[in-house]
Length: 249
Image 1 (spheres, rainbow, N blue to C red):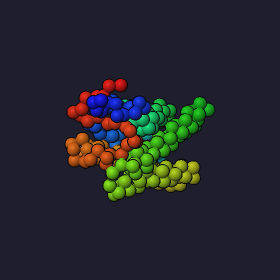
Image 2 (cartoon, one colour):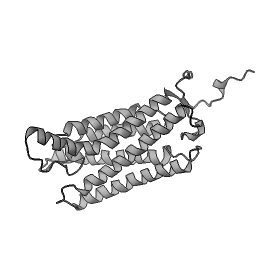
Image 3 (cartoon, one colour):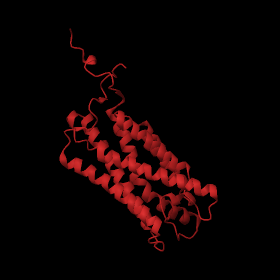
Image 4 (spheres, rainbow, N blue to C red):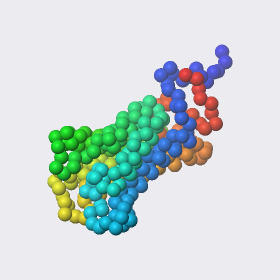
C-alpha cells in the first residue's frame, strides 16, 4: 500500500485553518495592544486636556477601567474590542482555540460592561461586578497561555525561553492579586498614580511581552530558523506552513 501521509494522522486531529504567518500576526496584535494600552490611556487624557485648554489634574485614571469616564474611553473600549477580535480569530490547536475564544469573549465583556462609577445605581453596580469578573477571567486566561501553551514542556523549546514564559505567567497572576488587594483596601487612594493602575499595567505588559515573544518565536519557525519541535503545541496538532496547501478535512 502506498504511504499516504494523509492517513497517518488520527481522526481527531484538527488541521489549522491558519498558516504560521497569520498566527504570528495575531499573536503580535495581542501583544502590541498589551504594551501600548496602559501608557496610552493617561497620555491620551493629558493630551486631550492640553489641546482643549483644560486642567491636566487627574489625567491619570484610578484604574485602567476608570478610563470609561475620561477622554480616552473610546481608546480603552476600542483596544479591548480589538483584543477580543484578535483572540477569537486566533487558531493554533484545539486547546488553545478554546482558551483564546473564551479570552476574546471576556475581553469584549470588559469592553461592553463599564466599571462601577461614583454614585452608581443598582443596575450600574451589577454591570460593574460583571466587568470585574470578565477582567479577572481575561487575565487568568492570558496567564494560562504563558504557563501552559507558550512553554509546553513537550516541545524542544529552550529552557531559557520556557522560563521567560513561566515568569510572565506568574507576574500576571501576582499583579492580578495585587490589583485586587489594592482596589479592595484603597491603598494609595491619595496618590497621583494609584497602585491599582500600576498593578494592572504590570499584568498587561507581562502578557503583552509574552505574546510578542511567542509571535517572534513562531515567525522564526516560519522562516525555517527553528525546528518544528521547538514550537510548543499539543501532541497531534498540525500547523500549516505558509507554502503548504491545507489538508483536506
